[in-house]
Image (cartoon, rainbow over all chains, first blue to last red; front, top):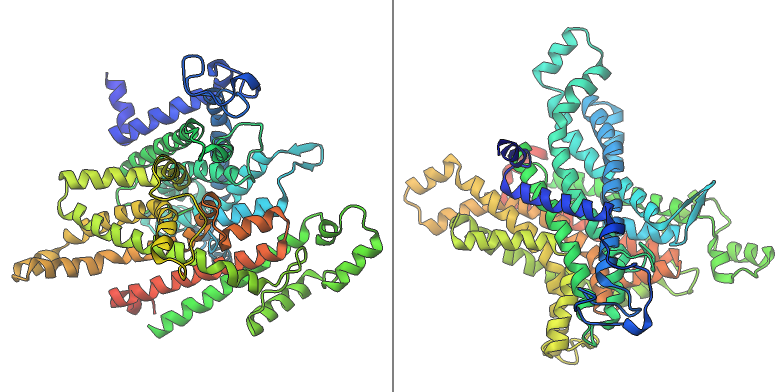
Length: 297
Length: 316
């Protein structure tokens, strides 16, 4: 069982490993949604509406008689896709910007980049996201021949909004790393600045970024759910955990508890998974805890 | 200290200007002009031109921006909505107090509870209390507040009538009823931050307690409570910083919470404005949020300067 031990250590101990298992299970559910879901998530059955959890519908049905379990399974796609792509965009944009600002410190470039990033971070990500989605409108936008759906808009916006967080984090580490002796040594060897920056400084800046990236995945799930909950995200009938909770709200006072309890449990499980993995990775990569949990929302 | 304050304040003012410019450019660069939204698809070119002239929309973005900033800073005037014709200042004055109250209650509950819980958890490290506090912290950062709100409504408003689902009771009408109607929203808003700050207090206090000067303090025979007080004074610096950031963030999450509990606050007004495409209102509300956020961060810096004068000396 040494391979199992090795994986556990990679995830930063048993806690991180538990998180990794939850995340892996969710990813499998999202990818294999058509095989796993017992029913069609969009199939309306008027005679089966608002059934309690039971033998044929394990988690009950909603106001249109659609199977809750199948909608949760399909809803995992929207949540995971938005949060994963947002972090990828944030990393692709934020890491190079922070690296350049930290490596070429003391210049106008550093000042210009950091001041603008700090100004943008003056508004919480959730407010930016809601305001921007609102300004752009919830209808689909056609960018030339490519139609951009609301999910794509959401993940692009979130990705852009993650850039300041990740850039500032990379900047802090790059600032310290680029003053280290090994950088001076590489300079004496005649290696160009750009090359030192990417092949020597960058790898040493990645640990906190990986940890923060994992925590941003958790935050992305919550923000996607929140925005879909207020009706600005994934549009019905396409299922998402957030818009399922939104329609459940109308049935709260009449006591149909299963409509709101299960989608929320799915959100919580996913977020717990990413948070545990992030905590584990932090113990492994960043024992001094320079990354802060939850502050990026 | 004063130098630090002015440096921070001038930077904050700069952030406000940049955020506001970004919002301006964004709202003005969308394909639909506000005139089209208000007057509808049947409006003629002439009517639209007339509307834009009346509301000053035919000027360049920079000119509009400068006059908006001018009105805001010189006269404290947030402007008027293009779509509803309502006065922004009145709108904000009507809705801000409720939001502010819920956020403030949530904020003080979260900070007080987390400092106590984090301290106990650090002092009795690896005890049952510590494990319980850490478990609560993980759950608190993972379970979304708006879902907790739904579950709490199910348990306490539907199954039992402890917190009846009714509109907000004004404080002038019935104090107990008022407290009861804001208890659940504030609680749901505070959970996440309580968890974050508890973790922060615990780890920060553990680090401080391990320092040499703490050993020295104990060795001189100081009363343990006194030693703890000194430790907290140092340990709370990062907690105060994050608490300052949290206060601004709570306004964002208040949007979701107000929506669930049907409270007519400022955050909910932002959502209504977005759905109505009332950009002047969006701009005004986001501006207020940024102001609160920047102000809270500034206060946190000041508090830290008081907690640990070395910080102020180093940066100022």
